[in-house]
Length: 447
Image 1 (cartoon, helix red, strand yellow):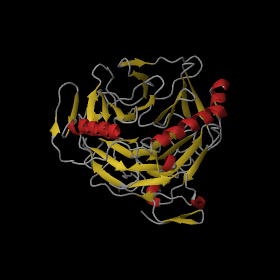
Image 2: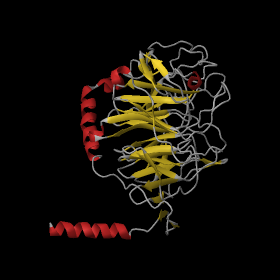
Image 3: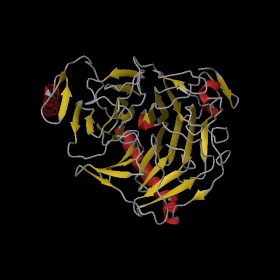
Image 4: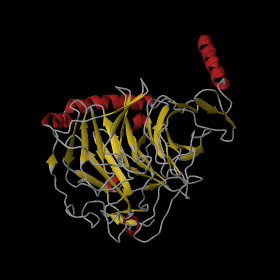
């Protein structure tokens, strides 16, 4: 870390560039108005100087506090051990649950950590992953439950699917789901269909899947491989450790990053038409993988990662970018790295496609090159009624977050208790919950 000056203002610190951190855009406060990009752990190792490694430092970058144009990365409380590297981070209420990942020896771990967005504190959750793993995928499927798929333990690539309930700390396996072994894949939840969309990643031979999109259908606990229409546009490239989001108001899946064979465009799957297309905004960031991202409609945010396309070297970075999906004309760089160590200055990468980290013909290519998407689909992106609908739903969601979220966890040394069937839990069981419910009923009757 070092003090940096930019745009006539000074940032006290800038994190070293890092990749394979856990995190994303999370909100807290009244109506969820305090929004920031959070980065937990990661690897700062770089081929530029041979320094760095797995860290236990954590950061956030404010997104809705302008500070007169002087937004800076802010240091958060350190965790007791390495947390976040190759793991997943999912927000439930006022907490972020960091599940699994790797330690500094790059061994799979089975721990779950709870980070309090309001208190900036770390708590070891009184539960464990059914199997230690790293580079799995996780997504919230309701107000308390997180679904995880796949991952890797040593050379074993996993195919199991589990649901973690943060309210009672139980794990439930979806035993009937026949998902292929996969890691470094990504997924997003479609609440209207009760599907989880999954794309890419690596298989049990450690090879990339061939541009494969799956539906994990939770109602039927089945997996369907999508065969898209390629008569109009080709499939996206084989991606791993990429960005993936489902946008309900547009009914599309979008991908970005995770490979060197594209032009840093957005890959868009139009579910209604069963076709893929591409959008090429101006100011496209350097191609990378293992970055952070989140959808906060109509904006999609992206930060950090590994600039992989320069001679296949590891070159971590600490930049922040945003794209307005209603116009999708140009990316905007919110934070340009100035720390020479953080950017991998030899070779120098500044995240903007203008450094020497992009191979020809992409060198210096920052122009808007349009789109291969249909006019009807592009009109959906620009429809103001969809934005108004989203903002109304977002307000209702943020108000719901004002109510107590799943419990702040204690008794981290309680022994594990295995139960029958495919679920297991830890700690004293459900008796305190039952007593609490009875007490609540009696209190209401008295009132």
